[in-house]
Length: 248
Ligand code: ADP
Ligand code: MG
Image (cartoon, rainbow, N blue to C red):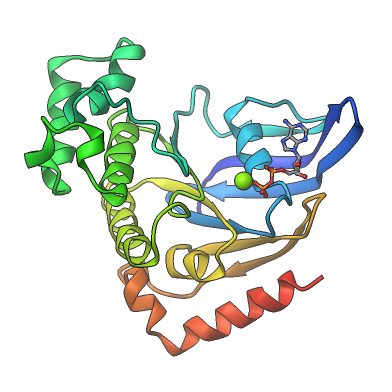
């Protein structure tokens, strides 16, 4: 039996604007288990980012609750935009989060530099972000997050600004890094293939207000990389199942 890391219990959320009320999330129940890779797929505007904002505590649920298995669970983010600072080197960008949180020590610095070396960015430490490709920048952003030793990674469409080839390669690398570092992750995406190629489970959301339509276990072994998964015959079966669930 896997242990729970986080649980959304009957969560609803409505946005209030001058134009009126928009219900973004409707009675959502969802558990994330320790060490798992959960993908959330749903149509654009259905409420996926809202779910992550609720988990981050940027929004409070209108009803229901967000519960974590331990206090001070550390969250890490990887977003569509990398938010790297152009006036800082790669190294200084990676150390930024540690600085801001007053956690920069010899040890945490060494760990961060080790992540850069391990994942092929060691020789770019003194580069500026604008000297890197989009895919490399996203990797730097991931390493900056990992340097903070998060318990749970929240990935909000982290590949969607990249060209297709980069996207495939980077998702493969990011998958490998997340597995190797034994992180739990939630990947939000509108790309069914991306979800099936990376996740242990896929939560399919309805159009807004987001409701959980289906939870689908992806039966690939964790050792299979996203690119390898895409070549499996079962890949297309999972794709079709999710695609059908997404039909209105
Ligand atoms: P997704 O990430 O699935 O594309 P979002 O969670 O960003 O969707 O948004 C869900 C719905 O809530 C959308 O209809 C969006 O217009 C609305 N929404 C998102 N943020 C706000 C906000 N700050 N104020 C009002 N409405 C919002
Ligand atoms: Mg979004």
